[in-house]
Image (cartoon, rainbow, N blue to C red; front, side):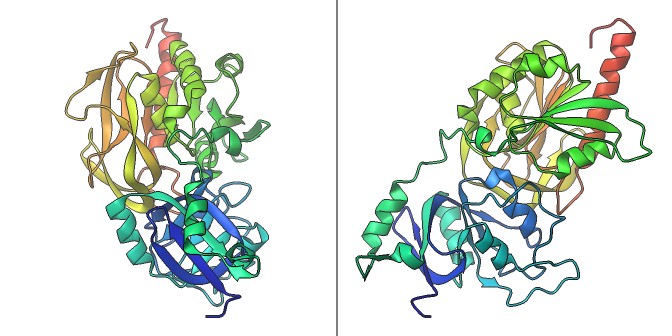
Length: 392
């Protein structure tokens, strides 16, 4: 390994991994997490929920299918840094337009390769996620000498922690846009989707079902949302600590008060939990990957699901409970079979539900796509109740 290619990963607890520079060279800081997916690295990289996080891939071979212009989940790569073991020397896929490292370099994403990512993952599973830094190139040299580990560790400890971070506004669109149903598909509903870090496949999945989706900025007020007279409101996934998202909680409460059907995923699930009066908490190392087992407690069906979250809702899973904020009965509808983390909420007295995972699941799996149909059914029920003059 030459000095030119050298890269160093430093963890907040002082552990150091030395490897090779991958993508851009320089310095990056963030919370280091691991993703257990064996496929879908392009969707992972472009998921806004990874904003300010250094992502470690547990699968050893990354970059085999290259990169293309069709599979991005947002306008750019959002990860703060990228950690892989064995990057592909040459992509082999008919859809590939560029190599992965070319995209990382073009978008200034500092990465490291050639380290034992399984060992690193074991560290994070034991100690929990923590702040970290990747350093290469000029970031390793100061005054003509190589920067020492103590200095690199000081830089890592200067990074802002994820707990308490409000990040949705940093990844949200500035201007609203509309995703129409495919040509020839009857429009059956209009939904306002609040972009807290939305993935492109989410409005596409709704549009496939005849929903006209208006994606709006995270800062849009409830009054502005309700002025669009939506049949339903959706809150997306996104980065940061739900405990710091007070504005989103206030907005959602006003929407719930208006009795408009609501569906939320991931960050949107946490915001619903807070709006209902429950707390949220940080997981030791979170759920990130496309192989997480979740049980739908109504059907007892086990779904293999896509996850990306480091926080969870603190609600009772052994019984229905009363919303502490006065929204009636609430049921934990889904639970993770690995650790009993709350994976879904269902309101029994108002038209609202949410899940913690990603039912759009680009690049898979698709076990949970039925949840978009459930949203359609919820909006249909609200329309029928309105026609009958009854309050749902």
